[in-house]
Image (cartoon, rainbow, N blue to C red):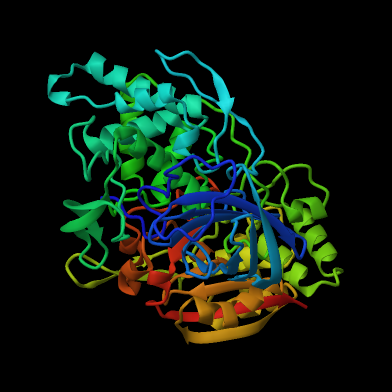
Length: 618
């Protein structure tokens, strides 16, 4: 039931020998070694860790400052003449160069194609240093409470964990988490649970109670393993790494049900390796940071973040989170208690990045600094949006302008259509297909029409992207509906309706693409420039309108005013509500589950959007 869909899964590359004090010659054809190199080019400091296998295969990890703190994984080959190539598995990074015969120097060129443009360093010299990769994120503290473990504070671990740096006492404690539940009473189970919590707290890993709950649910309290010593259901898609094919049940979006499958699961040499791999999995895979896992303020929030990121492919959003919450509560843990949030790296948009980093509460990102904020802020007020826009347009560097406008797109307040207060007219009705296969009509005359106001609610977010303030005291989307009625504009479901309303608020449509379908390259070439120009963009799923927030290597991020659509491929225009599997926004508050919804490219590239429209301020 575990779905990775990312290149880094299972056991991360681990050093097989300690870093030698002096580099050995590289000519020996069957030797293994590991070295860390550092150098600077084009204002970027690189740190490159290389591990050589006996067959000359290289695994590596590089960090760049400024850039994403945890770094990126690479794979490549060392040739007989000491030349090499390394290709990124998490982004489009590529190193090509040569290592000196004594192993002390790397001469290389570096390139990376990112959503923000191309970055190249044609002459990069890296010198060997006698240390491993160091985390670049600022330390913080994670404070949690359990009924049977002493409450302590530890630095929050948000960089890749190297087993060789973990104390033997912790390794032994993790390896002791091997019990047979059939012989265990509740007290014994809880003892194992809190042993895991204590071990991970000593490592400074965020949310150790949640990891222990995952161990309990993924392995049946230690009873079942998906691969050798694999107690977290982590898959391994690399055929060159140890793995076991095992049966599992996963949600099939096409069939709309759980199906039996044989999937490859990672093998680990012991339980400690499995536990460390689980900690590294959320650290190394950026989708967990994007889902808000590291900045969650309660264990409940962390559980829902890991669910949103897709740890378990159940087809029922929130179900996995609730199972983890139930286990933690059963162990006497208060999942609602506020915990301190780990401080992550700044949201750097350096060209070496390849993907947007975690949205942490501190420190401020580039845009926050531009408008003189002292800490990271997720959503801006309309005054902050206008201040940011006024400062961005004054910049001379077009690439920096685009980068900052991309950040601004992520800070637009989210709007929930289902709590709108507009009352329906005679013409307001909505059709849907019932279980009987027949078309049914819902008449909204004299009733709130929030459920059919996705168009003007998405337009509200577009207007705020442009810095156009709500002139009324009520909800912005309700004001837009009043503008439409007052000016006798066409229905809000038509282009004449929503474009006419935008025109009345001094915004104009500058782009429309009909029946748009494409992969990352096409979206980057045809749609991304609109976001980087500071335009507001909304699009139609052929029956439902949403706002486009960002385009990255991983997929598109949208703000859906109706709720969280589990999959684009599940969307049915004849039954929009049914497409959401009940994961809808509430009707009593502005917050909703449709904010920051990510659709990966394996869905986006197969889906045809009815239209995509961009707006600018007149």
